[in-house]
Length: 419
Image (cartoon, rainbow, N blue to C red; front, side):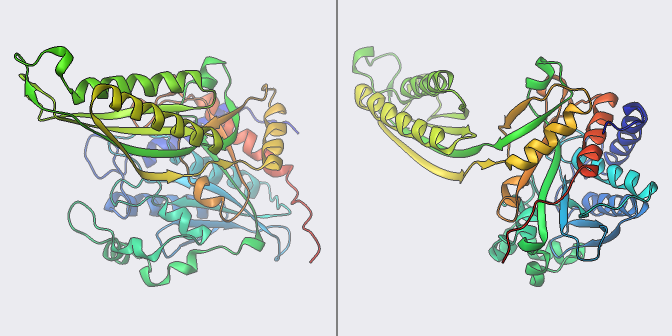
């Protein structure tokens, strides 16, 4: 069922819209589009207009997501959800999130132009808050759709002291009706998202797209080391309790563990020495640790090993080591049937199938509480993301739309068990 038109015109049309959407920014000279900001409002209006052009009925839900619906062959057809997010990090690239929304709109537009209806209705979701940059919450849009958003997030405050509740009301949302954004699980077949890989695997293997197997679980910790301050010139090396030396050994231990453990990555992203004077042996140090795996058992086992290793380092060096978790998200396995369907669509584009996990978080983490989840990765140059250097090719953009269209045209909802 290979789609006849060349991927180049599709890709050019998609890239033009991605360029257009990137104009809507809260900061001049760079792309920064934060949840419920003026740029988010403008982008939401433009996306809603493109959804309408594609033949969808459009509304904004209570939490500020833009929702476009394309009817199925029957009024009671179940719905297949497509999409991603339109908020960005600060000084972002054009493709993270936005690609998935606009590719889905383009695919629906092609179906509509040919008068095609599917056994499922399609809903394209442009989530407003995946990145969690403005407020200290994340995945607000997808959690609302999945029915798992805690109303207490409305009390979150941004750096300017603005409450999320007030920002949402000013945006046109309905903070007192968050539950209305929830979809009924029995009516939803699944959620499928196109996203740039944000990693170098597909590029290294010269593949345009790949099928995602799982979204990695993640744990984040602060690691505090308490040593003993001393004069840098008078305390002999063998009598020191140097917090920074212990911290350096811990950093290398983290790296060594991740290098020898399959399906695991670990990163020390912050390193602070206290008091931080050039002529003082450090009395303290603080590190952050981010540890991820597509398999929760692997991640948890690594954390246990690391905790034991850190205690041994502390005992040997005469310092105290404390490890406190401040974030935890379980891994989400992508649905086997959706993976198989995406693989067949990839193969029909004459592309060898490649299955790979995602090390980054996505709206699928939240949507998995509602329905089966599937993802298609698109190659990005150098694996760069969350940066203006994000880059994809016109050809790959067109291929992503072609794969999605093939997947949709071949889609038939799985049989539901009898009640």
